[in-house]
Length: 100
Image (cartoon, rainbow, N blue to C red; front, side, top):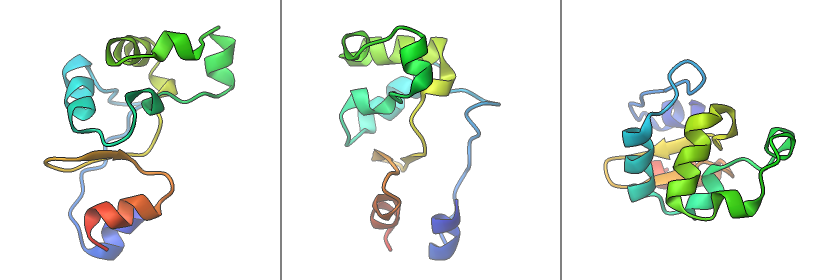
C-alpha cells in the first residue's frame, strides 16, 4: 500500500484472493469497523449475477456468510489497525487513519 510506505508506516498486506479472511478474521474486522458493516460487500456485477440484494447483507451475520461464500465481494482495501478498521475509499481515509 503506497500510502503506508509514504507515511513510513509498517503494514502487513494481505492478498484476500490468496488468503481470504476466515470467520474469526471477519468478526474481528467488523468489531473495529467505523463504516456500516454492509459497506464491506461490493455491489458490483458479480453481486447482481449471484442474485444478491441489500436484504441479503443487512446485518453482520449475513455479511460474514456472504463474504465467506464469495470472497470476491469483499470491498477493498480494508485497513485495520490495533483498534480501528475502515474501508480505504477514498484513499484519503487511509492517510487520515495512518496519521498523515
